[in-house]
Image (cartoon, rainbow, N blue to C red; front, side, top):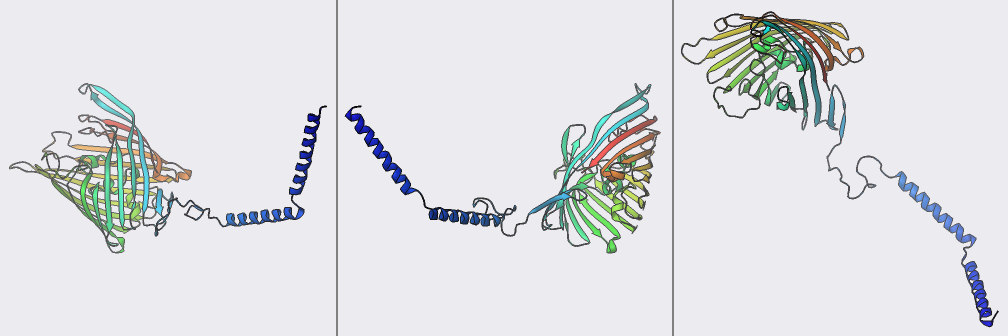
Length: 445
């Protein structure tokens, strides 16, 4: 080993001894370690205290980012749930939105005696259809005295969506209410007073379609003033509108013969006993009390070439959760403008009843007859409809009621119908016999 190697090893050894001595000098003492442990414990305790005081709710808090949006002064939260329908509501109840959907899916089989080939052969038509699909919104704004409704509907023949209802109402007090917008007129109780899903049979009556409220169209645009009498016995309304079947039209009257120029509607219903809610359904299922209501209506629409007047007198009797009986007489008067032109008067009557066998099953029957003015109809001036059917209410013990049910009915038309009424499942047949079988599933949420 030369002298340079010896000197290098000696220097490395001395450096190692120096570093080891310095490291031993830097090691913490027992007292220093105790201080560090104490400081760590204090920091952990402080962090636990901060965590326990942090606001973990959905309301704005100091624990949230300073950039996060906060509710303005006076703002309230929202609640949602189900109470006889879905709802979204402000906590103070001043704003309510109730969305819903009504669907009626149907199969129809129609047999017409001598219905094709010029009356030489029988004809059978059958198939499925979505008779109705209606999304809607309703509720109140800025308090319980301002209400609204928006309702759309499918167009069965055009695969589109149309606007049916759009109206707002304001309660001046407990007696008087003003409604403005597009809504149903008030000629026939079964049309304007009872919803599509609360009817007794699969569809409304033939009388309503031929000479009643739906003869031209059940909706119009206008304003309605409604009144509730003392002790809530009398309900009455008066409407000024554009007239019958002015749904989704503007203010113009042109072309002059396509729509009325003005219309007026009056209706009054008087409750002798029971509940008004029972007057809004025509099935025995869901009725709450023995109820008896009398009603009448009168309307007129002024066209360029004629004035058309309609009226109804009806009675509604309910035995709680057992019977629902409804009857009405309807008339339609047409007065043409022009010297020597004859006046036309058509009239008809309806009687129907539903009987609840048990919470799940109800049987029903309906008969209605229309007599056309003989001066305008050469033959078959009497058209009648005879219907028998049954409901199966779904849910435990039929708890869903009309909101979810199956309906099967069978109709006999001795003289068929003068024109196609596909909404009812009926086809014109030139006076021959017609039989119609309808099976429908309906749901409302």
